[in-house]
Length: 118
Image (cartoon, rainbow, N blue to C red):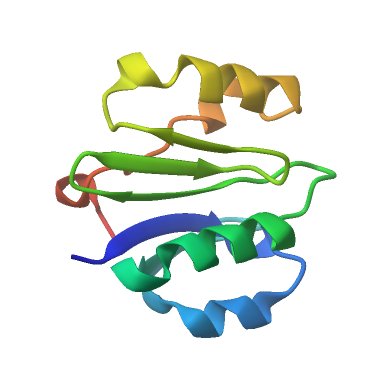
């Protein structure tokens, strides 16, 4: 089963890395575009590393990937392997806040395929 992921297109230094992923959906805001992507299970480790290297760190952005009972949260400085259960998110949320990301943006939504809306 593939991983799905959410990332902010404008948070990437090099958008060419998107060629490695299948874009499943887009959500457009005033100054941003969220991308829902799909990554083959065999490529997830490399894609996570590539995303981490390409995320802008000033201001800080993050991406997250999920499938079944796995949730991978990728910041430019650190990667968290947690679960969709919010009780496992404390360290990732605290880290995000420490690098300047507002808490309301650290909801990792969606984090289960059944919660996807676009």
